[in-house]
Length: 101
Image (spheres, rainbow, N blue to C red):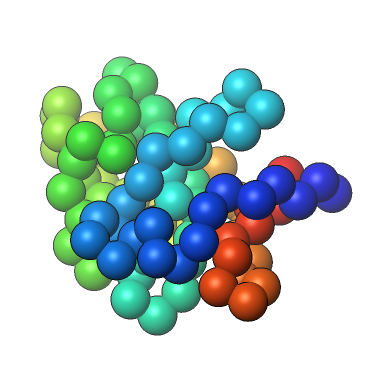
């Protein structure tokens, strides 16, 4: 497993969601207020960027067709998407954030 530094906790003070690209993967990193989590950033329905959507608690809504995903598990909360998002592990070390690939 490879760990990549993706930023610091301070990067999420004003914006709880951040789009990043790591090793060619488009990833959405989310600060839920309690922990940091990461899922794929392209909606599994039509490929729209979830980072342009709206976060409510632990659910992100796709801006294109309204699919909703749980940012903790990647599971579809509401369609039309049928496939879950890939989930990535985020580790915090001394206020720095690392993504495990």
